[in-house]
Length: 99
Image (tube, rainbow, N blue to C red; front, side, top):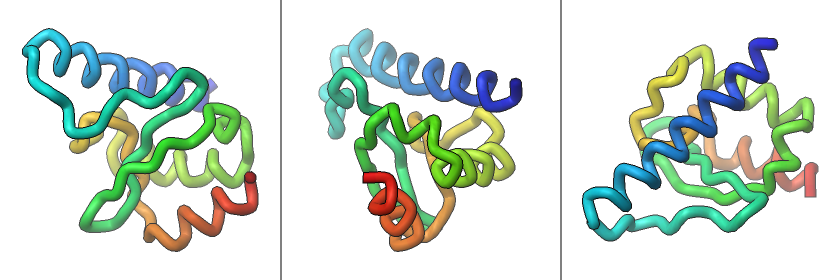
């Protein structure tokens, strides 16, 4: 149940950041991800944007990264999108096994 709330919160955050940028007429540095994908910001200090398939959300190893994000940020993500506070190389190691 907590995971479903997390996904809904992530969707709300991503949707509101795209909507806010569109309503102000400002050009967003990062375009909205294509349908079926999700933008995440990864890193401990400097955040790098990755676009991953939504299918990753059902994978246990990716859910562990999301749990870490939930513990640190709750639903207040400073980058305006889903932020995963782990080393970039750890994120790449997890997602490379999912592909």
